[in-house]
Picture 1 (cartoon, one colour):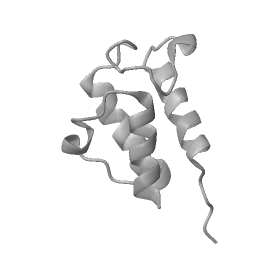
Picture 2: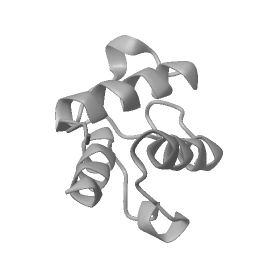
Picture 3: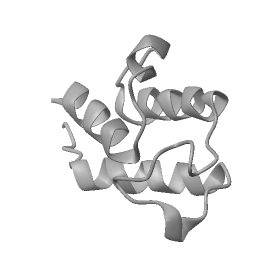
Length: 82
């Protein structure tokens, strides 16, 4: 039986991960840039690993190169899930 994961659930899990990485919860929004959140490239690699572990979505380094905001990351993962 397959469980459908919504974009909102993806966004919430990414938000939780960003908080674990040290981002301030009140600064996290879809428009927030990773640089503003003090999220570095190693954190983005970890975020890619989470997406693979939790949803089976492979996100490679080159996929993340153009990703600057939380919303772009959420959209990328959600798009790969569909």
